[in-house]
Length: 148
Ligand code: DAT
Ligand code: MG
Image (cartoon, rainbow, N blue to C red):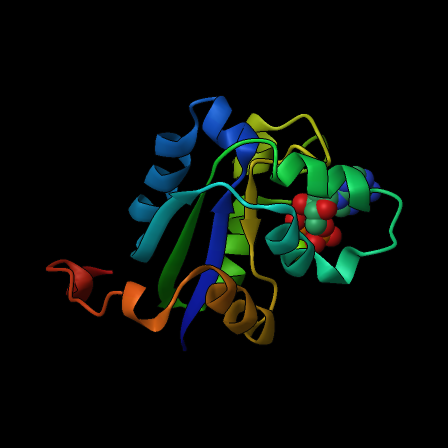
């Protein structure tokens, strides 16, 4: 089933020059980038994005972290894109994430874990609309789609 998911390259990914590496993995897997921008989240936006975590012990630190530097937001499209991206990201804690996953290969932290990916269709829709207007999401065909 064709799905869209919101992916964020978080402040540590930008600052550690891992943007190209991470985007390259998604591209090579066969996911299609249908929207992408660099932005600096403000507190209000961060609080919306992480609303479900409000009140948790790590919440304040999480908001400080995600607003501490620019991020890259993307919409990725593909068959079961939500699950596929979550698998590629690995477990939340970089120390526990399997080697071969993005977090497993590049993160040693539970907070500074490089990437965000939506965890359900409902959240993907909500999260995409927080970062992108309909006009910013591209409808186009890649020449290799028949091979993916
Ligand atoms: P994920 O990003 O794997 O979907 P999540 O939605 O449970 O994880 O949490 C959102 C972010 O909050 C996560 O990427 C990092 C941070 N976080 C989660 N659990 C944490 C914890 N126990 N201590 C510190 N930060 C945590
Ligand atoms: Mg999550």
